[in-house]
Image (tube, rainbow, N blue to C red):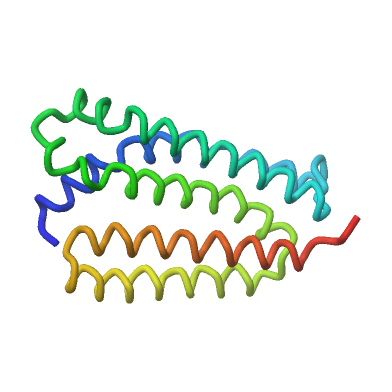
Length: 169
């Protein structure tokens, strides 16, 4: 994909980037709490945090559906026509990636170190492999779907590893 496609995708994902700006500091704060022992997770607390994140993610998707194209058009009037088809998928992908970052902080504390390396390795293979394949066959739309799939795969792997690493009570 060329520079025009990069500009289109970057424009389409502007909401998701804002979501990331909020989620990444939260992830760092949570990791600090885990490391200091001020927040100790069990499976129930872990899933409570993840359910809250999924609800926030759902609200983000609703806001994106309702006004994502409109606000993006206000910010980038010259690119909105090309970016509009990608606004939902690009922002959902970014938001899922941000959710994975928050979950990753629990994995860094509670899972064996090799699991985070395995997850990141699989994520990289899916992102690059699927990205190259889908860009070749579908262009920018393929890239958007590849990013979404890679982020969903990463999030679910983190869910599984963290769930298995935490104690029941």
